[in-house]
Length: 378
Image (cartoon, rainbow, N blue to C red; front, side, top):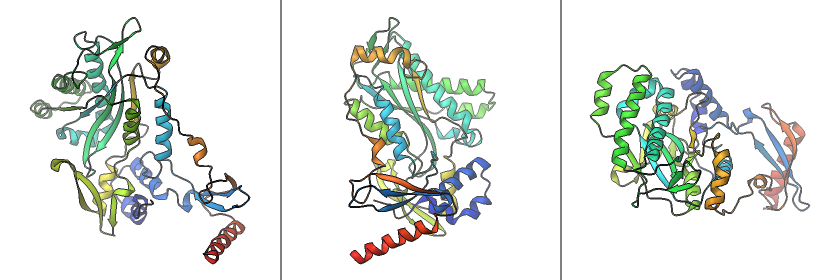
């Protein structure tokens, strides 16, 4: 169901506020891209259904394809999931979340690339370090990590959602299962202590000189959240679908807008995740969304260990032969966008491509006549 309100419309209405804001050039560029997504400014194409009993024309405007856009994530998410399905093993997987304390928010605002890169690095140091320890596993493990920078109310809340397999590769190249028999791969409290120490150590190496900050960080318990293993590989895929290409807010969460304010749905985790409505002034709403525009070229989904791009070529095929490869029903995404949305039978064939100036007049006339004919038929 198409949402009633859209982020792009809010951004279009407040174009001048964005232009006069203190956002850097990259954030402004991103917000402009989102405001133009699937509008006439982007250009587009006209497709015709090839079914003999249909032949309808369909006008489509081009997408911005920006990774922060709420309209452009669905297809990219499914393509990414299909690739990850090819890499699954017939073993359990853990869901682990590394969260940074709020004391780091100010530094994150000024140096987001440094903080987010350090978060990825130290999270993997913790997982790989415990994995190499013979007390817990004694093998090379792996991790897929997905960066989220927001809370439900779009405040700054950097954390990593990680998927970690229940075991690793021994020095002989054989699969080795974890020794722990309870719900978690490694002891969470010990991981939290090491995570805090490693992160602070990395900040010191990067030249961050702020003893007051370090004292505050060591006075606070850091949070690592770990869930029970997923029930099966299909559940891993379902998880990936929820988190990989998620953005700070979806259009479906926006329930009302005006020139002065925006209301949207949030989850109050202090009240067991109960759904509530939050209203912000429009400038603040846009400002909070802009907090989560990542630095240019920053990679927010990363693979480590034997799932990294360099290692999986050496390990993955052999591991799948040892452990088996899950059978997952594949979706034929490559053909979904070709089907006619009207008759559901014919395939669409592009008959006209146009730029931001609009389609040629004779195609516009044909589209208008088609709409008129539809009204008469009704």
